[in-house]
Image (cartoon, rainbow over all chains, first blue to last red; front, side):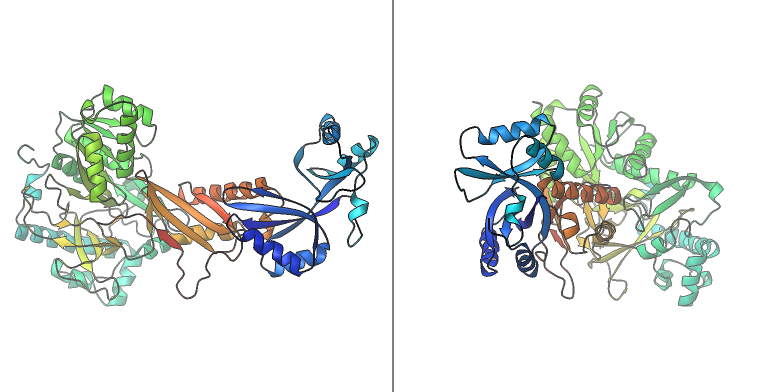
Length: 145
Length: 437
């Protein structure tokens, strides 16, 4: 089971991010991971949150374009070469990574990384076969991370 | 410049009384022709209670109904064809597409009179059979290339039928074959000037002496720029497919307005709201009546161009009435890179492609070339988590608009509700070009 990711379309101008994160704050949404892809004219803010439903609802009510998609998240050792190992496994199996970003929180010497791939199930089974845990069970709706 | 020369001096310098008599004689025949052969126009005349018997000369012109672009759209493609198709030898078409496209038919007689008009324009800028005339207007359905090509033949110039684009080749032929007259859009002339400079040519390195530039609005400032960069005199030409093509009117050496070939195309200026005919010298909408075209005889065709006419004497010796460069439009049509664009065409594409009809069209001119930017609100259907999905949607929409308009826009997808909603009259177009002096 892949992880739910919320993507939001934002104009690339001063104050856009502030407005967006305030809406999430007011809705009481807890952000676990985020990244922003930016172009000259617009940005796409992607995030993993606790409380997907209320986050989407708050954003849509505020007029934002919201997309919910799935990503694969893995726990890797928080040490040099930790990320390289996972990426190499995916690459050697021909899995194309569209983008990747990291979780804000760390625990027990582990870091959490999100991968956007074409086929989450395939990526997860490849990682599992190579002894790498995916994180989906940890960020289920309203479950503690 | 040397002694003025005319292609058809007997017409171009005719006394005004003789011209009016000639126009009257032709008008009477033309009204009979369209009444007998175009049922749509006949019905219009009947609704107005006018018959050909009521038309004795140009003083009766005001009695006749107008033809608008909507009429042409309604009668697309052959409703205004006034002769058996077997007598036609050519069609030309406007740049607009779906619904807005106008197909004009020509008999050999119609092609001849159109080419005569272009020949008058070429001789008015000093063209003779010694000249090499580089025609860099598009050839094909667009009237620019075929019209000037025909005129150039009639004058006896060596004609270089370059068509538009391929700047490298344009420059090579211009230099190697020593072109002396250049015919193209003013923006392309400016671009050629810059391209020559980039390649290290000075204005005096080419053999050009004159340019005939039209099909899009341009300013006096642009004229001076082109004249400087190419080392030539730059002349304006005006026309529209509905009436024939380029050469409806043309500038002479005086560069003071365009002489209308009024023996073929009778002009009027009307108030676009009341449709009243306005006296000479007043600003209003330009209306043309084709006096002797056979296949596609427009009578009182509303051009939507806002303009002024003058009978003041011209130093070139021509007595043909002059029109000022059009000062705007009485509809929402934009001319972008020589192409007629209606905002409604863009709206049609947006709806087809699943977008809301909320958009902003921004037109500008950068380095003498028109730019077209279209801002459209993104919808959830086109949005996903990747940048490439948004840029792909922008590209797809730009492609669909290009198919419709024939020119490539830059499409910008923006967040919902960021384009002002229309309250009453929507402001959908921002034309930042300064096209009118």
